[in-house]
Image (cartoon, rainbow, N blue to C red; front, side):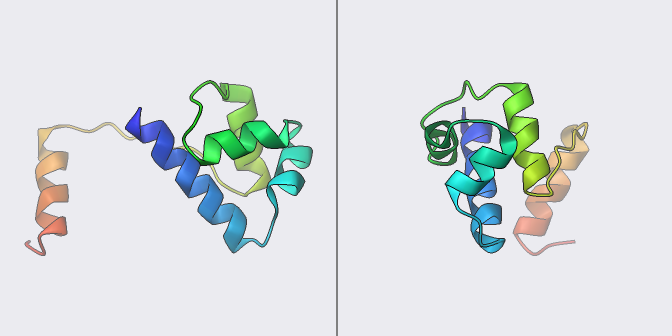
Length: 84
């Protein structure tokens, strides 16, 4: 699942930006450090909603759900290519 892998990478980047270790974040979120490590490396997709939300809360992050349609995809492609 590419999206879950990207989420793990985003969590790792945010954690490093804040200067926190995996151990610190895992302890504050109430999960095992190894679980956080596997998630950040894209090695697991079974972190679970509660654990994921706890990790995000520790890092000051939140999930956002946005409905996407054909127009949204076209607009994204235009932005990536520098068009209007």
